[in-house]
Length: 476
Image (cartoon, rainbow, N blue to C red):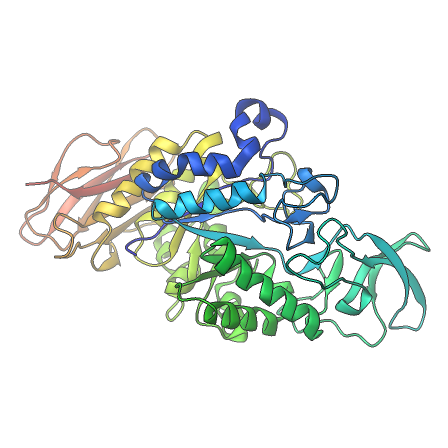
């Protein structure tokens, strides 16, 4: 797969408030994706990251992260609804089939850390020998024994965050239990699954095999993976991958803003097929938005620029957690300026797999501009890659030399955090002598010719709105 791109197909507020009024078709996401499959493939996307498709504690209102029953994909009447927020199991299966028919691969957002919405509570002994009344009984009466006969109680959990008897919040670790061997603090929310319990571990891995082999998914995004037992992540990938002839794709959401820590996380899990989202790179985009990034070192930022990990990075600008309306509970700052500069960076780069956020693509009206960059990636982003020696604190240039397998390929990508009306000019060596270039974005209308040493004076507009250009060879 050449120059792959991921489309995240959802956002937190989807089908709520003003979004429900402006985009009523998003009320049935599975059907919408099926209808748009051909268009999505034609644009150049390769992977679709779908939201959690299983029944959540909030039923049809659940975004998907309040996992109640993994095995209910909108098939059984549970939590007051048969369908999930996004549709029914049959609609999901039809969507996956249609997406496959158009050459697209589909990733399942797997929330494996916890369960919410228990059917009943029980009295359990805690680590300190006191007792607590906890919501840990899951009977799945709507589903019965279909697909799995395993019912859950306190034995498959390490602890919870609420004592019903005393109406007290906290982290309550059960007697004879220890928190799992996760990369960071094991406890996150709800009833925390104990993956030292082989019964629940086997059930979840079997579910993963079912999602791939029966429902048809091509990989997984692991929610909050740094809070899930490292051995579970490793074994899930190992066993699910061995259950199919597909080349499965796995992404972990280990939300840390240090490239070195992300690399250490990957080494700790010890699974070569595991990729991770490049949160440290996104931090640089926040600084660029603020006009505070030293652009000379942008080519060193993030996991995507670390030796031995370049191909493990999933680059992105926004997702359903980083960009939400109103006050964000995660304390992140949405990238509202120079967003296209960030997308230009991740889409033209040789390393990493870039992700486009549905809300940016549709709700924020960036589709046309993103389609242009996606086309540039697919047509021109090939060959050797290097930074220009002319990079300074405010303007960054990146070169792809092109290759013989893609005639006419090669590019000069320029992005700037300047905020003025003037045109920024930089001398750039493209590796291609006496070659004419034009700006594929259309921001600069003139053509540029490189000299006998492959040098040319390339330009970019010094504005937040149009401060990005992709110069590509003129077709002879």
